[in-house]
Image 1 (cartoon, rainbow, N blue to C red):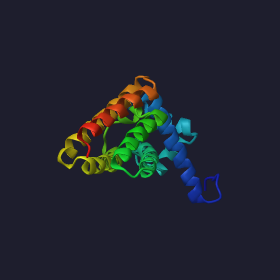
Image 2 (cartoon, rainbow, N blue to C red):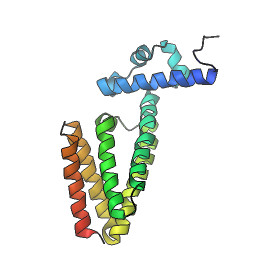
Image 3 (cartoon, one colour):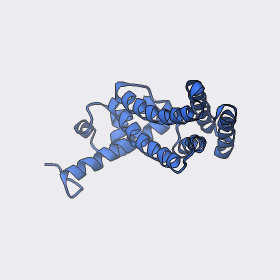
Length: 191
């Protein structure tokens, strides 16, 4: 029986899986999906290569696990920021600011560049659905007749903000422009 480095087998397995996910993330951030191989991940994680397959059926599962690590934290941070406000206007603007802050803090570009696969699409779809649902809810409260278009425009602006952050534009500048643009939409279309 292999030696475990935790009080229980379950804790040991969780620790090894965490090391594998961390190694996969490091690889994806530095080398992209092309660099994500069993050899590289196992070397970074400090485990034998054949040990990988005790935790995942293939290296292709790892990007989904990396995404699964980030999206709950991302969603929670945004949900918390939005919950601090009561008016639809302030909730919408909090969503914009928190989304940009999360992208600036965690880096969003490397996540956006991951290919959509059966292992990643469910996690991404669920997180995006929850986040976009918040935007739509606030626009429905502000301007029901244009909620679809305003939701799409808000998402497009924030997505553009993510791109600007990846290009190195200072976060304060990006937030000022994107938040200001959404504020202008609220002024033009809000109740």
